[in-house]
Image (cartoon, rainbow, N blue to C red):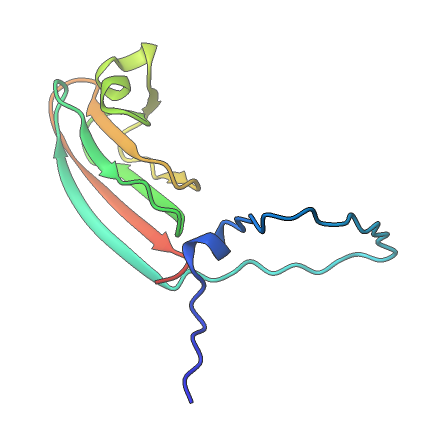
Length: 130
């Protein structure tokens, strides 16, 4: 007997589309509710060489990503959800200081360019499920 305990990406993001109307059920919470964060099931690691003129994709769109940590080695970097945003600097990106870990907890793409020069940028991502 085989049981698949790995949720699908739709289950992780709790996508619902049953094509029917669901009845609303009123709920009243009388006591504190205990919640537990799901553990990450696997991690991925990579280092990219990033310059100031061409944006480099650090993370792809990934619905199963729990979080990611980005660390620029020598130079500050610009990060954005698009290559054009990263390349445009302050008008379309977020500045991340060198040698300071930056945590991302969304599933969108992430692109980067350095503010000046070139640097290695390390990325560690944690995935909810396979």
